[in-house]
Image (cartoon, rainbow, N blue to C red; front, top):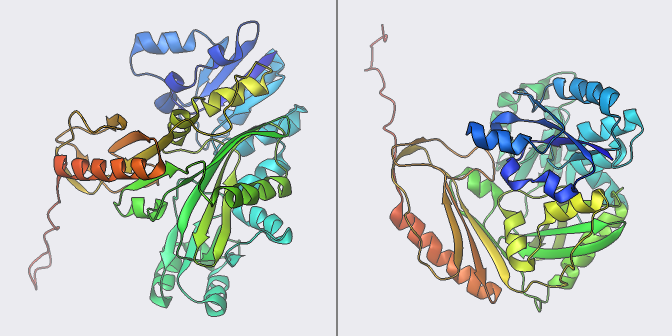
Length: 424
């Protein structure tokens, strides 16, 4: 079999040849800055397992990816295209449709990438959602707030990592937002969605489907921490639910309903988000890809399996290990976003029981800016516990330790010219 792999993840975490096995031809189209080691020797080792590699510096949004994929298909005759990043799902689906290859179609990928298409399908099936609407222009945004009130959340329909997501609390903020998003005043519809903001506990449900059957599905809770809070400099954490948590069945049932409603691929990873509100559960969204922010490692801690590996093995016909029906232990994670300022000191070795891994991605002397995505961090950690309560306590202890070990000096306010000084 001949496989084209569209990849932007570090190859150190994506050993495709090991997962797929020998006897197949693997062609890699990749983002070198994100995927390849800076060490020349390591990079050569990473690329040695592929039959051909094309590294594109403008991988993210360049038609060079499609051009190279078509050129390589003419040479290799691909049987399958493998893509796991949310930003590659649609381009891979369109290529499959064009080339007549099996796998996720554009119709399916659109239903999972475009939040408006997704919510329209879910709403038609009776899945509980917060009020929402398309925002093609400023008038539509005003109309929604007059019908549903403030606060509201505005987001790109095909965004990711909470980029471009804002909460608007009043009309002044609405017009400030509209001014900063000039597309709201043109004749071309803006690719935005608005929905009512609800107070909630956020659950994410992660899992794997193989040949139309759910092989793994497990909910985790972020408590009151949020992805938007990360953009404001607040820690985000997540812990898996206990096997006897009374919310478990309702969360899995609602996720299953969403999967059955949407044109879900027969084999896929999925990541769903559900709001727990005082009035019950509201479905937020679902994606057919692996979640970010170390969630794949969190699941691995609990279940002992690696979802991306299982997914690639399943796609390529490889054998799968036995997948437990419930976690052997509770996995958790914590992400600590950067705050603008000069990083003076960073955490050292962590000796807190239950903390399995701490990563610090910035060194003392680094000038930090704000987080731009909900997974951007200067420090992150994984934890395990016998119960969710134990894992949560460990995260709270970890938070206190990280905060005591980290010193970020705020930047001075920009100097202003004295009154009457023209600044010349």
